[in-house]
Image 1: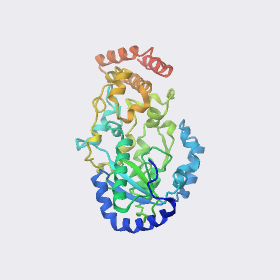
Image 2: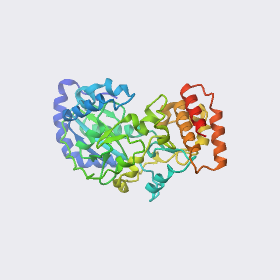
Image 3: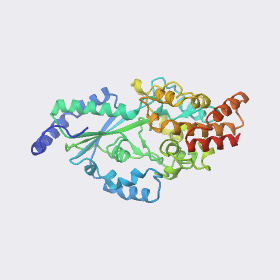
Image 4: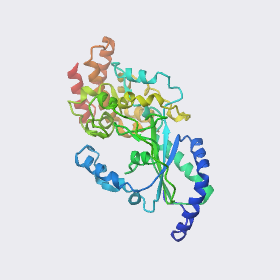
Length: 378
């Protein structure tokens, strides 16, 4: 996606006209956003210079782990106009993702799942369609409606797909405040939502930021299984289960393996611990309905997926990008933790051992090492 039509020489005139039109259109734009499944939108400016020292310190500490792209992008992440030349404002959006069939006691249920040996836990956000595709498509449709109303303008859509400080833009535009777990929190929706951005070459009035409401609460920090939240508002990705099971491609630190438990893709623990998520909202979109095997799957059943089955079952899912080998590594690790637990039934133990042995010669040395470690735990 690139900049919309219109020659450079008349873009300033177009932007001035669009600013007036958008001020008048803002209530209608919010209606369009809701019709498209966006839960809230706002507008942020592009001067993020005050966030640069924190970003530099985080990178210098090595907290980004093996995500080398974060360091290679440098300060471009905090400079929207360098990422997309011509950007003047950023329209931010959040999209709630709890499925319609989420039960009222979902927080208690999800918290209990990590204590069930043999069950594979996939992070809530990843059980349905790939959010990148869904949110990006909805933001593009919002742009199309704007263009129909005011004429062509420069734009580009992002959803966790480029060096963008999404949480910083979201908080500056009033979508919420930064929690101590570094996620954005909303009084109306907790943190169970996705973020997306529409970079535009229009000078739009910024929506006001909201105040923070974490107070003295440290529930997310206290309950993080690996203590990855090393301080308020600071995550060491190298210890974060979401990073380890999704972004990290090599062997997982043996000291951290037992702490991962049965989490095979992502981790929701800091969100489940947060009191504000009692206000998390259900989504009206069918996209977030859980796929078969991803809501209440057994470790042994998912380990039986061949690569072709994995690719078919995860088509259009965010999970597919980690590939079959990393998927098996995570499952093998979870199997080892289950085998070391005291609450595992003998029949389930036998099934898990069989699944591990079946993958002992898998053509990936990381998987082989993980299987060996897990068998040793039995």
